[in-house]
Image: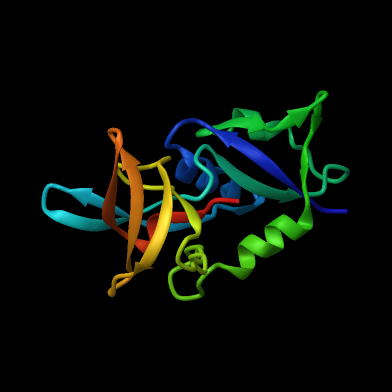
Length: 167
């Protein structure tokens, strides 16, 4: 029976590990997302890993050896617990695959539905990790937030995609 396993990769070597594992005949999943990055010329988009330093491998450990994974260029080995390769639940992989866009192969992350007064956390950009209160939509995929910065409350405009609902 085939199972999904998580493979740890060297930093920024997910693509190299993915290519080399596929060349060896393993079925792999390398989920990537498009993210916005502020640069000197303004906002630009880039593709990055959904799970940095990890990808997923689909194999039957009874029929095929998993030993070559640890010597594959770009890969460090399988994630293990108690010496045994950790299986990734099929449902997790199905949910990731359901969000992959057929046009570009990238995972589409849903932005949370927000109501005024909801507590949110900034998950990207220079304010990453800061928590605040959602105030309103501000057109063109931007939102207004109230954030506590440097001892005072400030209203800030941010791209909606940078937010996560605080649970």
